[in-house]
Amino acid sequence: MVAAEIPEPDDPLHPARGLFALGRPFGLLPVSEEVCDAVAMPFGLCHAVESTMVPIGDLSAYGYDAGRQIGVVHDGDRVVPLLRHTTGQTRTTTNPDGHEGADSDTDYRED
Amino acid sequence: MGGAVTLVLTHWFDPTADYVVSELNRRGAPVFRCDPGEFPQRLTITARLGTGDATTGWAGNLRLPERTVSLRDIGCIYYRRPTSFDLPAGMSEQVRRWSAVEARIGVGGVLSAMPRWLNHPANIGAAEYKPVQLSSARTCGLHVPATVVTNDPVEAIRFVTRVGSAVYKPFHPMGVTEQAVHRTVFTTPVSVADIDESVRLTAHLFQARIEKQYEVRLTVVDEAFFAARIETVGETAPADWRTDYDTLAYAPLAAVPTPVRNGVQALMNRLRLRFGALDFIVSPDGRWWFLEINPNGQWAWIEDATGLPIASAIADALTREDA
Image 1 (cartoon, rainbow over the protein chains, first blue to last red):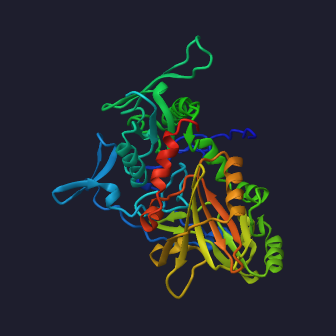
Image 2: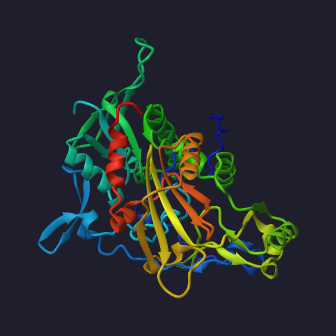
């Protein structure tokens, strides 16, 4: 494998992918009040569509079983594994690589 | 803990990782799950490099309040959805940036020096470059649609004219969020009339549009191949099935054509990946066209929809001793 040049990190808090990429928890994305002028909008973004954000919901219902090392959710009086409450399919715009963007395989909850 | 421990690097809220951890638990295989985001406030690292046996690497441990793992006991690392470091409040912006770099190179560096991964983050990063994927796939014998990467509208028009039917694809589906509205870019059919000077504003990828018989999500774990046929239920088939998961139907495919299997295996080896989520279009003539490989893609929804035992295969890969 050819060794890759190591780029300067552009944002140390969310480092460039390829080094040791880290994301944002729960897919939290930065919010901007700024809106780009149409004249400065690249071709690709001219074709962007509004995403349907699936809300995570009440986070107080979720937890982590440190013994089994899996996520859990409170379902009434029961505590059940989180994986039984999702399809494993998510539709989010999370940020698995530390950048402000989505995973290409979207997960309805996160990622 | 004793024996080869699987280190799972991911956020606690990761149902996809839960599938694998649950399978490892079922097998009685030891697991240590943590998120770099827990460093430094919950996660502590100590790593020592001595002057003794030159064949040994870093020794020490990762420690959470509830459990500890010796670095020497770690067998394979599963890199899923780790999050950024949770640095203490009160740091100035500059100090926070400095601390984050130190943490990334220190913690990330010690872990990166470990020999066994699925997949190593450096290989994930290198493989995420779509132009690398496309040229590598072609070199490995896979069919790849004609493609141009350009910021020249004239070249884009020339390409679309030549191929007749084309699509625009983003290199990365990050989208933008402005005033609380998030917009995402999907694969979009384009015509010559659509192309204008806005192409000059950044790099754009245009590709020949392939007529679809159906699409395939191929999940590969080492030598194990799991193919799922994806079809759109409804009147309109979008150019990108990710635009509406609710309209999709899935079915496991019994076999992957041998040339495709060989090409994919070669591609995985070339990109130094043990896991990959690959997308193909199958054209009416039965040809498999490579679209992309996601080196850290989601797969649990495919297992849920088809019963393909992907979590089990990942657990196999993480615990095998010869990888």
